Length: 175
Image 1 (spheres, one colour):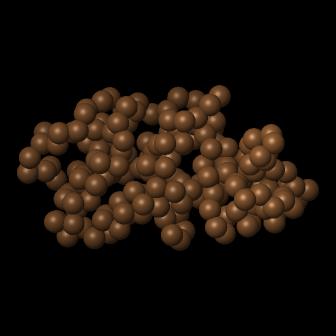
Image 2 (cartoon, one colour):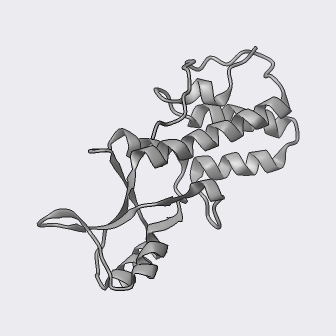
């Protein structure tokens, strides 16, 4: 019996190779909706993100003299909206943010339009903007991805040959 993507991946190994393997099997079996979902999870979302990718964080700007500093604005509703957003970054970026986290918080760097929106809301003009997110929230997001991959794997069926990825026990993140 093959290991599930969840057991192949977290916490010590990346989820990306397990998703890629599942994507190949899904494509061979004609599950193109699964292939599209896996592609989005691995490379990032270009449009709307699933509900499990909506997490709350604190917008941060990079000050060359002081490092990363919190961004505040008078409009708390707008701050909440930009602080709670769907993470479009791929699973590998989220895993890297968790790996380099400090004090239980990880920085997810923003790009393009997100930088402009955050700067406009905070009345700032930072070239580098990130969202500081509790690592447990990001671990929960990855757990959701792994669980969904497990469901798809059960529907698609076992691979022709057993996977060679490292097997680890997956536990849901603790609060």
